[in-house]
Amino acid sequence: MRLQGQTAIITGSGRGIGQDIALAFAKEGANVVVSDIDPVTTLHSAELVARSGHATGCQADVTQRKDVEHLVQHALDTYGRVDILVNNAMRIVPGRLEELSDEAWDATINIGLKGSFLMSQTVGKHMIAQKSGCIINVASIAGLSPYNFAGSYSSVKAGIIMFTKQIALEWGQYGIRCNAIAPGFIHTPGTEGMYSNAEIKKGREAFTPLGRIGTGDDVARIAVFLASEEASYTTGSVIETDGGQNVGLYMAVPGRSFSGGALK
Image (cartoon, rainbow, N blue to C red; front, side):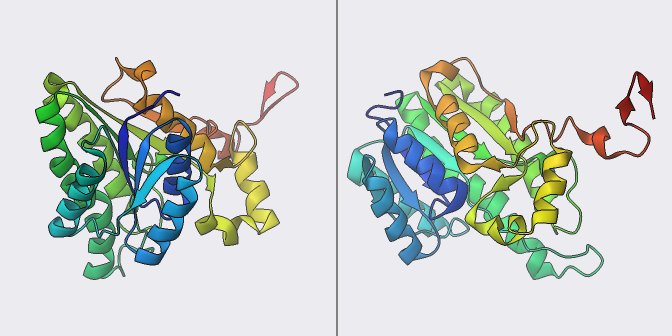
């Protein structure tokens, strides 16, 4: 098991990608601290993860420092240390920029970016003291190319990518690694309504060079790799987990199809 005996906190792990990462970590031997803003969701997810290994749940709002401190202390009281942090908590409030309210803009910024800062700072102090640690930030290819009508989502994900590099630069001297995962089209419970539409699903598959929509397991496997010793010399990196979606940009541009040796 690649994460045997290590302790991991995963925010936003009540469902979706976060839960899939929690399950993968537990199967690899990690002690997993499941956390989400909803206490019922947190409890149910922790119980599910515990079937695959060691897990505990702790409800927390990552935008609140007192909640963050309580979550980290819960991990320390339960398992004695924190070796891995996955900043996954996120909320998209969609809307056109010209119509977006302050509250809508701030909601995504506070959960995605401020929450990642508060969690990293609080956990980071313990990692600095123990001279080791791994932080994984769940970004998005929307942080590399803008995602329209999604409010501050792309700005947040771009900020998370730069925050990842800043942590890698400042904390590398303490043996702390920090990397980001940038998922593309991923089928989760939150996107079920969209991918149940056959036309949308087919269109998005056609836009992706590998020809399929990703799963939470696709992201979780990358997270396990980054948390393991296999990635011991990897820090400040962004791994695009998108089936080639980001590099397939020109597939959707008129006049860029290629057939019979001729560019059309």
